[in-house]
Structure formats: structure tokens, C-alpha cells
Length: 187
Image 1 (cartoon, rainbow, N blue to C red):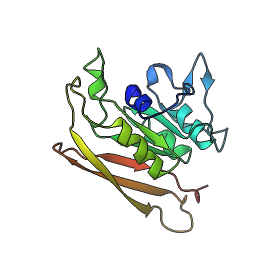
Image 2: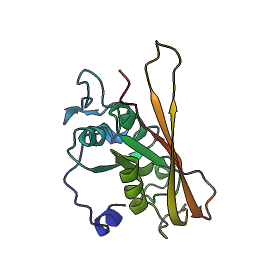
Image 3: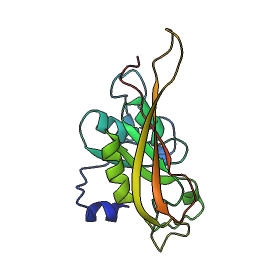
Image 4: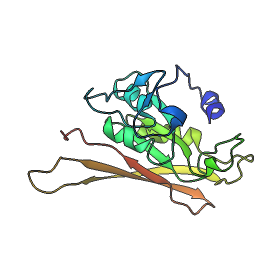
């Protein structure tokens, strides 16, 4: 994934904070401490890509990448008002890797401040790689976005969910993934 991003012209400016082993719902580790929420420092930034989500929300970087095992791209994105996308298995190859077991659960993916930027980074990250044991041959993505308001009544928290469906012309039958963002109208 890094080689694809470099070939597309990406300039890497640094690494952001994650929990130990990049597994956890809060971006904390003993070396760098706690990553606070971009909008309310009393709250968590989420994890495990909390550092990337905060860097995006504060305008420090235009795009961020990470991995998602159980919400590590989606949760921090939702909690920091940016977009995170967990591609389906095999869409973004995780190679070379010496650990075939764990790479079956997590997948690399993009984070961005807009759906257009997210689709741009995903188009660079995604695609077949002959070294990947499970791969999904991709030809071309197109992104469809829909907005759904959640909560009913005056007491609702005002959450909104953005869902996106990437329609890929491909031989792979797995769905593309789910995108989420917390609405600016929320508390």
C-alpha cells in the first residue's frame, strides 16, 4: 500500500499515534500517551487510527491511512467528524506479510475529510497484488453516497450516518464496505 501511495505522488509527513499493537478503541500507548478528540479534549479520539483522525480533523494532513480490525478506521472517523472506510477483505492487499493468520481479519484503508478525497485514496490503495493469498481483482471504482438521519424526536443526539457503496467492476463478489461520519449538527 505504501509503495502504491508513493508511486501516486503521496508525501509521507509522519506517523500518528495508535494504541499498542494497533489494537484498541482508544489511541493510548505508554510511549506517546493519550490522543485526545479533535473537538473535545475531554473525550477520546477513538482507536486504533485515532491519531490519523485527529490529524485530519485539525487540518494537519489532507489524507490518512490505517487499518481496521474491529472499527479502527470507522470509530475514530465518526468521533472526530471525518470519513473512514473499511474496505472488504482482499480489496486492499496487505503484503508482504509474514503473518497470514492476522492479515485475514484486518484490512488497510483510507481516511479523509471528504468522500471525494476518500475515494481518491482508496483508488490508489485498492487493486490486485499477485503476492496476496486472497485478492480481489479490481478494474474501476465508482462511489455512491447516501445520507441517513438517525434518532427520533427532540431528544435525539442528532447523529447522521453517511453510507457509501463502492461499485467495483470486478470478479470479486464481496461488498465494498461501509463509510461513517458524525454529523456537524450533533452535540
